[in-house]
Length: 136
Image (cartoon, rainbow, N blue to C red; front, top):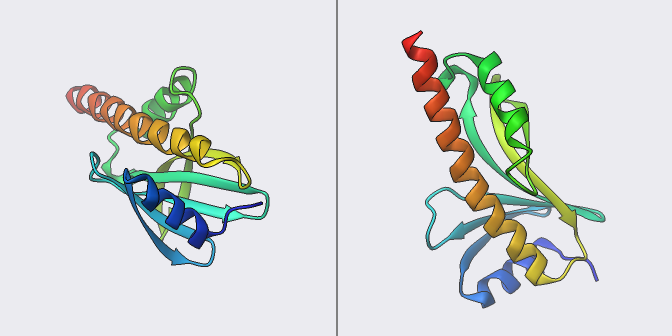
């Protein structure tokens, strides 16, 4: 059985750990009781991604340094990768994790919890690097 946005939202709500809101046929927003920033879960066919917006490029002091930092961070931020996408004409940094759309709810919860942790760690890394770069 593969998850739909509705069935996954209901399963996540039942855990009592998350608020999940279906935003369209393929996506839902997931809110944790401990984190302010939501994650987006996108379900397409056999796969789902769990992702969050981090920064717009205009918020980055030196994008070359941030790009290198995030490439290196994939070694210790397990289950996560980074990407840059155009959003309304602005380059935007995202953190992304992927898994099967037919995985058990415990694996979905693990991915979501890991993504929340990694998001906070990655944001902290970028802010520290921005601070260093702004002094140069």
